Length: 109
Picture (tube, rainbow, N blue to C red):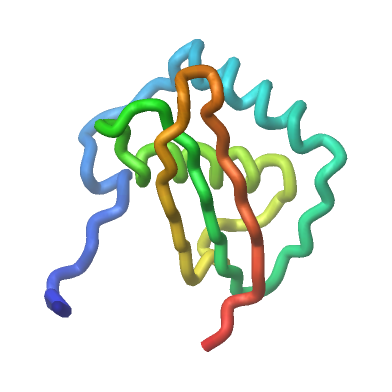
């Protein structure tokens, strides 16, 4: 179903300034440490494929993707406007076994 209404960005959805939590700062640090040696190929137009292991069936799959992409932008100095497709799948795992896996491919029109 195609709905002809302009999608709103996160910036348009919230009024005023949002502040990062200390938990976000720790998460960013841990992700940056985990990807230190990763050298992904980046393309003019990209497809991101995510597999996310979450320990709660009630966890929203889409909520964890934005922060992760923002951290990748910071590390690899690209603009996420170059991401033309995102595929994501949630897997329920035991508490303590959570993960996020990403593959970056060229976007094929």
